Image (cartoon, rainbow, N blue to C red; front, side, top):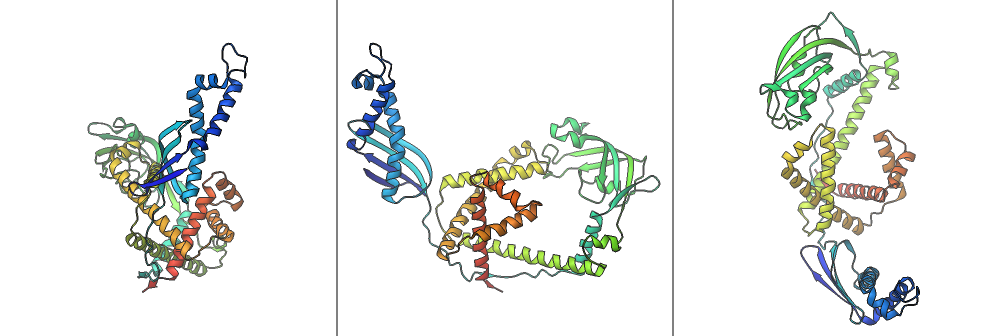
Length: 432
């Protein structure tokens, strides 16, 4: 068997394989024999027709079956012979097969890039201060109290910031009901008995502020200007007038920092709760800063490394990035219209992100190999514990979910390896 490897663009290679006739003739004869056992030819009992007649009658099918069997086998032998490890098979081309001439074919593959490792030790970094102020503790304590607050119906007091207001509303845009502008605008256009939290995130711009100090029975008109980058593309950049009727008010009542409430946090005093909050905020600040420094390391590695990338992997990663972007957009109320409106921008961003991911993964692999950074079962178990805490699940439930998919645990190990390499680089960085 003769094998010739030709370099195409980037990481693409053409594996040209020529197999002599004597290496395929035995397989061909075997196939003819198999076809002869099942052949139905007039004038002959099943399995009794001459091989020459069977070969002539079923020549196309026999040749196709020979190709299907022989190409994978000799392709694998060619890879072993040339010590080639493709990352993806793109296409099989120019297949020629004749019993007396042998088999010839070309396989288009992508291979891993060959590149020079950057100098990854003693990367210069600057640590930023992330001090926790008393105001940060106060704000967090207020957020905790709000999470445990209760809402009570009132009839004799106006709404204040943080209260809930129940409204009926209808909106007009460009002289027509906003609900008629688009299917995606129906909920924005009208609603009944809709509870709005004042002073928090708004479902339409300016609505929450307009509802402060209103009372049951009030009617008001609210002018709304949707920004150009509004999540719902069907109304982005448009103006609407909302007619609002107030149907109910619920006052927020914050819990008292008494003994019963403090027991929820296993502390005995407000001072102890504040101390715990400060510790948590400090640990979070340290984690954020570590994450930022690792991002700086990633950027350094990408900037200091030149390599060609397997386009098949880039395309695969781009599709994954786009799926993630669409999922997040849908969760935030985005629509198909919004995607189409920003299609080129989204695909361009996804493509660059994918290229960076693929490139960084090769650099990480190289560093892990050079520094002999191995992934132990204990590393995987620790990562699963963190995942369990993050998603409020048990490890015994998460692991089977990952094992259901071929890529599940492999992707997890890849993530763990990346984390270990980044931690190694951070430990060996030159930090000011």
